[in-house]
Amino acid sequence: MTDTLNKTAGANAPINDNRKAELLSKQVKHIDIKSFDARPIVDAMADMSFTSRDLGRATNIYNQMLADKDCSIFLVIAGSTSAGGCMDLYAELVRNNMVDGIVATGATIVDMDFFEGLGHKHYQALEIPDDDTLRSLYIDRIYDTYIDEEALQNVDHTIFEIAESLEPRAYSSRAFIREMGKYLVEHGKKDNSLVKLAYEHDVPIFCPAFVDSSAGFGLVKHQVDAAKAGRPYLMIDAVADFRELTEIKIQAGTTGLLMIGGGVPKNFIQDTVVCAEILGHDDVQVHKYAVQITVADVRDGACSSSTLQEAASWGKVNTGIEQMVFAEAGSVMPLLASDAYHRGLWKDRPVHRWGAIFDK
Image (cartoon, rainbow, N blue to C red; front, side, top):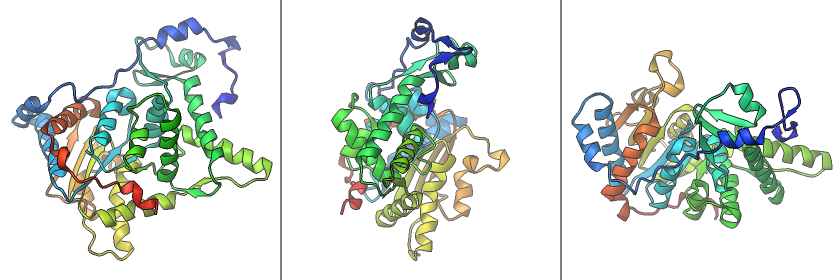
């Protein structure tokens, strides 16, 4: 684990605490989608061209998902928008029954949301010295956003503590993240945490690459310590993730995807259609609605940049109600989410509580 490193600068010089405090002096403020009404600007953008028009149509599709009483909506997140100021935005979607399931990277769930749930913060970089200097001060950088590495190590240790407290067996990431949400209910310091709210609202969170985060450090320490002591340890079952998410897709029927970025979460949720067919559910529906906000370039053929039209060739999504938005998500998600919040179509949506089906 990273906490085994000596807290010293380059040539064994002590950390300059004053300099560190100076660099970590301005907290990132997460946007509040309830505090402004984006409907007029989104309506106006829908009558423009280029990305503005795409965003207008994408917002309309998300509102269609909310209006469709049969539709279960999955929020799919990759990238660092949570650290950059969208964390409360995602939490409000859960709080107001605007999403029914989440598929995300471990970084989004553990290193960003759970991190803040424990009381830690992200910071705006007021200046960016060379990264070796940042390393000597134990400051991690995400573009123009800073994280205190010593605070992040607290996440490593907390994951370790949670693992030590549980029955040693196989857990899906959903099951383990649920325990993280329970921990925040009892010990957390932030009410508007996505992990905490998902636990309280039975909204399942899946991280198909869960250990690619601070969870990995804590779980490795848990397994190593247990093995040394000759006792059993818990494991994260990636196959169970796929099975559970596919089970939700089978039971849900009509589904819609609101995807930020690409990567493993995007492919994971789309593959549930194919997996259901392999399990003999030939009547499973492709994802009826799909929106993806990304800056990935389609020309290199990478899966993360594959368009929703391309996904249709694999039998994953409907080509009729989909929209790609090529934009930095932090700049357009506040508009989309605020528009949907203020239109209020979520107010009479059925509550699905898909997380509860695994408690039986």
